[in-house]
View 1 (cartoon, rainbow, N blue to C red):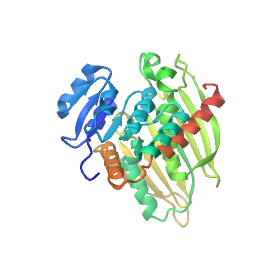
View 2: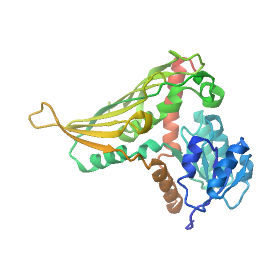
View 3: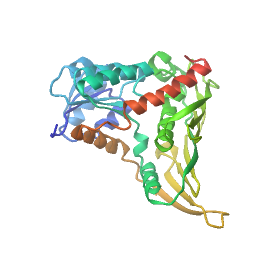
Length: 329
């Protein structure tokens, strides 16, 4: 496919709106939401047609690629229908609420040739793009371990929202924000072979977890120590990578999470307090647009997306193990 792909979007909430804003003018044909008024509101900004049933998108031969940004329980069914119709898919994280769903999508996509990218946009935040640049160009030494925290404080009525219903969400904070940390940790450390940790419901009156604590180890003994929470009260993002000769610390994601910043701590030959270089990113992030461009390149080149189904399966496998250990599955 050499032309600009023709897109459709399923799910017209906050994330669907962000995704729509990254599609080239004239390339978004259909937007879909069960709430037809919501679909209409989004469609008018992009000269697109609003529909209320995903089947209308699946049946349209002009649609090359589908962006799926619906609630978690709908992600896999819509993605599966799209790949069966030989369409490419950018599906919002976590891509499914069960590992077996991603395995089925992977099997069908292999037969149809459809490409599936999972929307872990944090990989493309400016601080993480800079981290990857420093890892490639600086003498940081071998990665030893990493430590990360990600949390928010919920809001009044949070326990009554769709994220608190396991049938719609597939779980709580671990499958919501936790999958971002697992994905980022795997990007830097590789595959995890030892999975330890637990999920708990400490505050909110809901049947899903509001905190999860993970210790993940690779076969080489490299550790990712992760904590995700929706009892953080003050929104927080912190991701620290420890090398033999340096430390890289990403904090903030913009907005309520604070200014996005990367601090590069450089070990001195005599050790002691390190030198510091601070990079700040006050203009926000283009992660959604960069991610979509990567997806378009996947389609143009016929390359396997990364993160795609393989990475998504590894992340959900960890989630399921923690939920099983903790009595949520």
